[in-house]
Length: 125
Image (cartoon, rainbow, N blue to C red; front, side, top):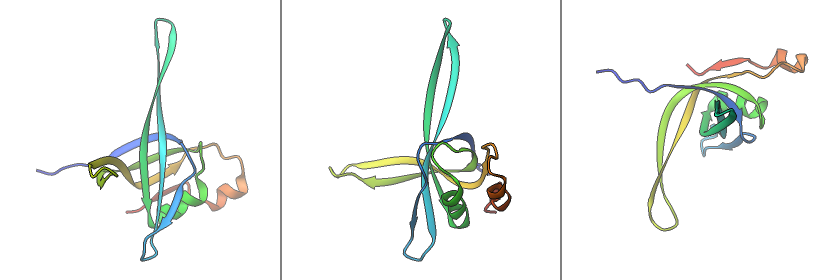
């Protein structure tokens, strides 16, 4: 039976992308995205924010690092991946992230000169 691992989110960056390089020179960028939900209950507006860890590789990582900043509104499509590490007490810890395969910048285009040279959407496939 076929399986599907795909997630789509729209949210705002919680911090500037953090760019690093692998020993082979491939760029990887990590950042988090806030997804907020609002609703009314008993006349009061309630809000809940979910934080999602994001990871981009290669050319898509370069684009994220160059054009995204804290507060940027983005559409992200990718796959979920869970990683494991051992903490300082020797305990196994797990965390889930989204490895992005497509990203689209959704902010209003303020600087037309910069917008013309940057890709609005990038798909790794």
